[in-house]
Image 1 (cartoon, rainbow, N blue to C red):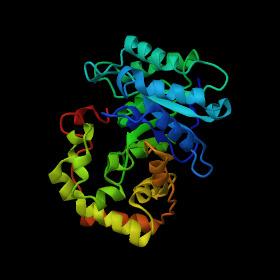
Image 2: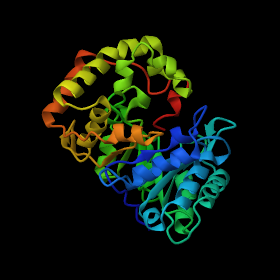
Image 3: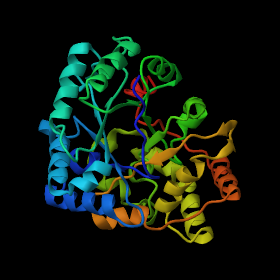
Length: 345
């Protein structure tokens, strides 16, 4: 049986915002940012996360392909690229059938042909297809690991049962789920405990809660939602009444970041996740598995703001942060009532 891919580093980098937005940045700008984030001497990340459906006409795959073409083969060999697929945008639903998996994996792999200097390629079905037994979907993907088309399998938006089913079929390299100070469901539902039992790395997407956990959101609170003109406008936490309800917690976190830790809210949010990673005796978990946050950023300046203010958090800091949420409980689903049933499949 093949082995899971080893996921390098403390951080990953998400590329969705580079191609899946009303007006994406230019390829030149995004490639400069990708070069910066993968080669920076202090916080270089070697895990890039993308999606087959992150933009029209395979736009995300084309961006990553062009980046690799302009990058050095030596750097490319060090990279792990994880791509989500198996999601039918025409029907807006996952498709875990043998035919669709084959079509999707072959399409993704065509942008990363086997050659000297190809990154390690991981494929993940974006959601659990309720019409197909999950073991079958994973077995279809495993066929392409066995024949060398891809190098490993990740899971996405899965619950405990699906994780257990997948592990019976194939080694799992990592699992991508949402985790942030404002979205701690993977902890509360036992998913983090299950991953920790098997020491499968958790890839934490939206670690800044899609831009809410930022200095800018606090400092420009009155106008923050006015600048949201993408899919986030349909999400619970971006609704004016819910944002207003959650603002006291947000402001308390901002104050803690600046007044106590002398850092930004972005850094507090990211390093809270890194503090959890590998933590012993955390909320009933003997030893937490590795957790890699994957922030994004369309410019070098944005990346620098996210990664650049390294802060060490203590156990007492975790207690203080938990106290903020006890005093200011937040509300709002991760997405919204319409799609909640597609999560943690």
